[in-house]
Image (cartoon, rainbow, N blue to C red; front, top):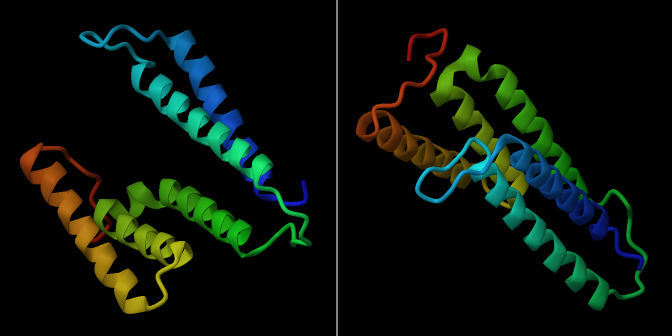
Length: 149
């Protein structure tokens, strides 16, 4: 197989298996009384199943083509990964609203939004909607920025 997509898919499979193993060590509990590892176990299971399906599809439909190892899709994945790391590091400093807004702009641009205005509007709508749902309706507290909001 010449396609390099399988590398990222295989990495997703390994991450899913890691989640499954570590979740089992934490304890699953049951559907009526979930344990600490309940959600991460099923997240890892779903991720592993999706990765396996994608691997099988890649192997079955592989064509002999010359592809660059670091094509546009790999650079987008790397950009998204770096944005998520920066989000984790800056979340407490910038607060929920600012850091999530900036993260979503980067993710939307790397994910395929061609125009900046669409990325900005979509980010604003998602941040507003999630803030209303989680802060107002569910009474969750988010870290505030250094500006106080």
